[in-house]
Every structure is written in C-alpha cells, then in structure tokens.
Length: 168
Image (cartoon, rainbow, N blue to C red; front, side, top):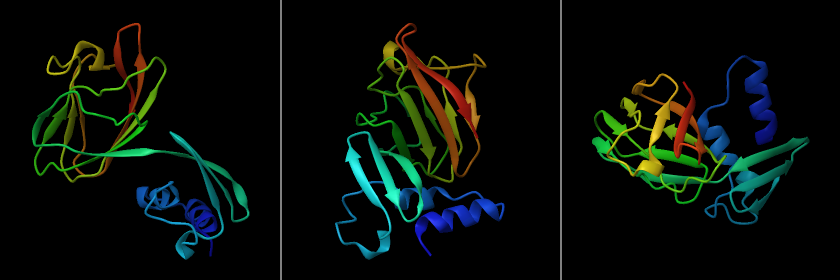
C-alpha cells in the first residue's frame, strides 16, 4: 500500500495520521534517490517547501523542518534555521520558549513539541529580543500539555514579534 493510501485509510477509519507519517513524506537528504521506502511519489525541493506528488493521490505541500535541541527551563531567541517548521527535542523537564529568530512579516511558524514535557509559551517574554518575542491572544503565558503538542504562530512586523494563533 502506498504511503498516500495508508494516510487516507487512517483518515477514513477515524484516526488522524501521526506526525511521523507526515515526516516520512518530508523532503530529507537521508532518503536518497531510489529509496524503495518512498516509492510512489516524487518530491520537488524548492527551499522551504516541497511538493510531493504521485502514488495516485493529489499533491501535498511539504514544509521544510529545523530540529532544535532545547534545555529545561528558559529558552530565548530559539533559532528556526530560517525554516517554517520547528521540531523541538531535548528537555527532560518543564521548559519555556519566549521567542524565535528569523521572523519576516506574514511568515508562518509551525512548532512541534516532540518531547514528553510541558512546554510554556511566554507572552512577551523579555528573555528574547523585542523583535523575536511571542505574543499570545490570551495576553498571558500559554502552557502546552506534556507529551506531543503543537503551536502555530505568524510573524507581525507591526508589533514586531510572533503572534500565537493556535495550539493543541
């Protein structure tokens, strides 16, 4: 069964695909040409985005990721590596994030907490540079549950800073 059909089958059966299902589709230099585990679709790399097609399913936009290793406690001015998707690893205890680098007006940032620890997003945290700070719509810190969690932000040059738009 192709990766596409496997994902579709999980949606139809009522189970959302896991993060690792989508990661398997992402453009990654660790999957060289001719890799039989990824047959049935082609990925065209265009920097931040890749376009996956084939396998009898519609095209999928794949967003390039930057893995970051954070520490327990405060994490300020976290580097995105110029990417729009950040995968957090590292903490073995509760941790906070007060800001991300590389903001451009209108840039979306998808943050995946890939550790089994609670993540706090600091509202206007002064540990980060003013232009890198995060502002929540609750005007207070936002705590993401322990375990896998996700946040979406958009950069506003009017603030300047990141605006937290969604979490789960």
